Structures are given as C-alpha cells and as structure tokens.
Length: 198
Ligand SMILES: CC(C)(COP(=O)(O)OP(=O)(O)OC[C@H]1O[C@@H](n2cnc3c(N)ncnc32)[C@H](O)[C@@H]1OP(=O)(O)O)[C@@H](O)C(=O)NCCC(=O)NCCS
Image 1: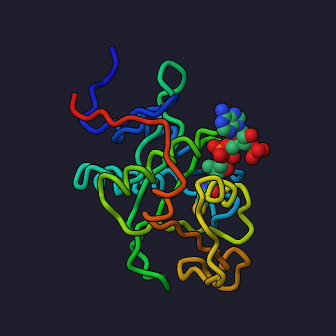
Image 2: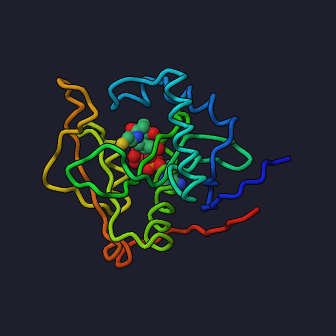
C-alpha cells in the first residue's frame, strides 16, 4: 500500500512529491555524508537535518512547491530533494527564486538530478510564471554546475561571496547561473507531466 500524496508530480523515471516522516532518517544520512556535503561548510547533525526537512516540507505544504522530495517508484522511496526555493539569506541578486538539488550519492550518475530539475524549471516557468530562475553554488562544485549547464543556465560573469559561509573559507566564493523564461521557452523543455490531487 503506497501513501497518497496531495502534491506529486511525475517525470519519466521519478516522482517529485511532498515530504513524509519516513524521509527524515534517509535525509539525515544524506546530510551526514561528507561526500554529499563536500561543498558545504559542514555536514549536518541529525537535529539540523530534521529541522531543515521541517522547513522544506512546511514551505511545500504552504505554497504547493519547493524543494520536493524525490522518489524512484518501485526502487527507492526517497533519494533526496530537487526543486525551487526562495532563499532566505539576502544575496547580491535578491529577490530571486533558485533551483537546487541534493541527492543520495548512491543515485548520482544516472541523470536523476537533471531530470527532476528539468521538471522544476518547467513548473517555475509555466505554473508560477517566473521571469527568471537562478542557481548558485561554490565555485569548486563542478557536479552541480554541470547540472546547471545541462539545464541551459548561463554563468553570470561575477562570482560572489556567499554571506552564510564563514570567513575564511574557500567555499565562500560562489558562482551564479541564470535562465530566463524567454530563453527557456526558446530552447528547453522536458519530458514530464503534471498530475495533482490524490
Ligand atoms: C549535484 C548533484 C545532484 C549532481 O548529481 P549527478 O547525478 O551527477 O547529476 P545528473 O543527474 O545530471 O547525472 C549526470 C550523470 O548521469 C549520467 N547518466 C546516466 N544515465 C543517464 C540518463 N539516463 N540521463 C542523463 N544522464 C545520465 C550522465 O552521463 C552524467 O554523468 P557525467 O556527469 O559523468 O557525464 C550531486 O552531485 C549531489 O547531490 N551533490 C551533493 C549536493 C550538492 O552539492 N548540491 C548542490 C549544492 S548547490
């Protein structure tokens, strides 16, 4: 018997959905993994991870969108998150809506992040009618930048210092990628479908 989600979206191989309590222990394991958190200031404790999941899932219930939980139906009930978020930290390019991802390393290298993010871009431009979606990461985070490039996002010329990364720390220097709705409509789409309700 599978849970019935109010918020759920299907891509070719994935289910993007609201969070459930059973996601929390896996999310804590992902956030404690030093490979996953290599480009963040530090891995998260279980308490920090749970608090993070609380915020994310509350935002999705309120808005209907956010950093959705990602599931591979019949294979893995939770592999991390991909989706859209309004950063709470004031950044040089605020206000903005960002696209972001964090997956269990056991599922890297399958194109899942790009597949889910393609859906998130489509949702942001077609359902939310956003003018632009941004993404940013440590200058050193090449895997994440590879996803941004595959989505057709364009690197902003100026790196910036992320205010939430303590000084001194080489991870503080970030790169910004952007994509406008106009450019997305001109060149990109994704093989995914919306299905809401229960
Ligand atoms: C960033 C992150 C999500 C990227 O994951 P990923 O699995 O490398 O990304 P993708 O989903 O795009 O997968 C791409 C790879 O899958 C391979 N692949 C296999 N099957 C595929 C398929 N059917 N379709 C597309 N790609 C496929 C591609 O060849 C590609 O490998 P390559 O980069 O060696 O060429 C992952 O590294 C991660 O979670 N990192 C930790 C958290 C993090 O840093 N988040 C970003 C902070 S801003």
